[in-house]
Image 1 (cartoon, rainbow, N blue to C red):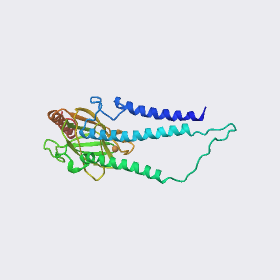
Image 2 (cartoon, helix red, strand yellow):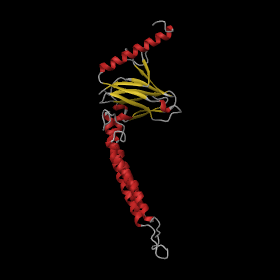
Image 3 (cartoon, protein in one colour):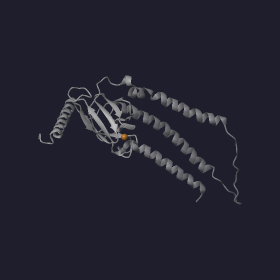
Image 4 (cartoon, rainbow, N blue to C red):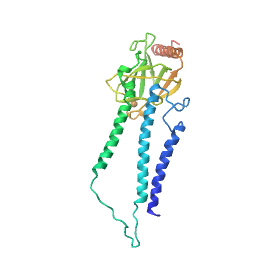
Length: 276
Ligand SMILES: [Cu+2]
């Protein structure tokens, strides 16, 4: 095979990569994780801003990728070693030592792009992560990560956390649609990461810290909670269910049912099941 034809293999890989990226937004399973009930968009208000950042960065890296692949294929095709009748190279490689202009260009261009991304994302970062921008609401729950589950402590009827009527559930997060919701995130052993993929929310849970985290949802339904920090052998088990309720009343009904169950279980424990 003519050596130069190998350049077509490089071209094919690049074309297939670009084709995959162009196809991805049209497939619900190839693109960013979105609920099937709401394809094409994240369910949280911050999610849409983050998706925009993803797309801006993908456009920049995509253009650079296409440019470098075109240069690579063109050079592999053009500068292949051509031999004369005696089997000797037709032209000799030229040697030069450094090129300051080139060095400056390929240092400055990425630097300018990185500074642009830093400034461009700053408003979104501040809105999501600055404690001063958190919604001014009492916490929905205190969520403590431990190897290997999410312990979720909701305030009971008295509305206060850490009182005897608290509702404690494992891996079960519930909140109400269209309401900015705040949780307090903790860890009782190692670093875990509270990850709501459909909401584009990720926050480390760090031992010794109580971190306020907020999110919202414009879609009711069931979503996924995952641990995004490799936290030990059972890391994969830290999968939780997220349920977004349509109305406040639905959420209140769910809460009172769970509190009823919890009270019954405690009575069973205390009386060895004879209370039933
Ligand atoms: Cu974990």
